[in-house]
Amino acid sequence: MTNLAKRNDVVNIALHRDPGLAGAPFDELLAFIAEGAAERDRERIHPFEIFDRIRDARLGAYRLAKEDGGGGATLRETLALVIRLGAADPNVAHALRNHIGFVERFARPKHSPHREKWARLIASGAVVGLANTELSSAKVGGSPFETKLSSDGDGWRLDGTKYYSTGALYADLVIVRAAGPDDRALCAIVPTDRNGVELVDDWDGAGQRLTGSGTTHFRNVRVEPDEVVFDGPNVGYGVPYTNTLPQLLVTGVVAGILRNVLSDAKALLASRKDRHFYYATATSADGDPLLQEIIGEISTAAFAAETLVLASADALDELAYVRDRGLPDEALAQEAAAKAAKTKLIVDELTLKSATRLFDVGGASATKRSKNLDRHWRNARTLASHNPAALKARALGAYELTGEPLPSQGFF
Image (cartoon, rainbow, N blue to C red):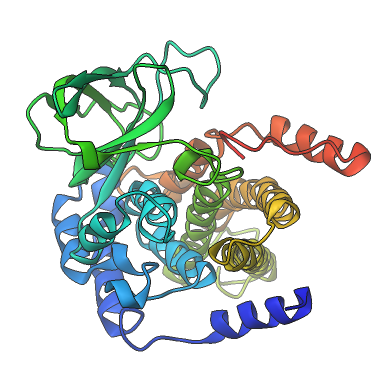
């Protein structure tokens, strides 16, 4: 099959709308998630009930193949849903990022060890979090790991401490990055309620306060043989550019924040209909061409952000198409990683600027804590800080100028 034919196949798949999991139940769920999101952020109210609803709706099975009980969504459709989730509540959207990555790494690939088990769990509605980061590591996002897996009869024992365990607080299972007896990198995938697992709610970031990203302790945790997946060239985290999707998911959440900035800006301006500065050129705020211009700029930024995220998702769909068939994928993987990185740089900037311009629409009253409109900037800034823009831009520059390969692991 030619590249053009492959691209057309991917586009045709992406345009198809499944009336099942993609239909009204998600619309109702998204409305429920959006209700009270600002208050939850302001008062730090954890969304445990929301995650129960997510399990019941099997939202986490959206990307899983239909034959495995999922929605069979493309990555374009998945990112479109992530944008909507990010607009409803970026904390919830971000808490699901590692779950979506788990589905892509372990529950979808036909050759993945214990795939049938993971697919059954995802289809049932189970939610997965991640415990990866160790503050002792000099290389952020890299290995070796101090968290160790040691032999225990016919199974294993897990010991270590992880930080920023995004989504783990709300999850049924957690992926734990660790080193085996030979220091070979692996994933131990264990229930969060297993004896020896302690989830600590101690994330204190300026934004994204409700992503369940606290410290996780593993103390002599029993791990069964079918709960371990060792990294390999074509397995799990060993697959080159396997982190491109999780990186794009973060950007998708940021694009969702920008969509919410637009809706809040419009609502804020409408609320000022009968109140405006005495020296303005218009008698009403919503009729002021200068404020209308700001709304126009924010709407343009939101359109651009979402378009870029979905274009990058198309590149990942093409990569998934090739990988699912065991075809050479190096060039497509590089292309998808480059697009996702470029998208991040632009979407972060557009969102942070728009989150500030929102206050130009509302004036001083918009800064009231009760409105909590600063959450948009705080959340976007926190997400943007997950991956340094300057390092991304440098890698892209070298790639464009000299063909230097983009980093294939970690935060690419």
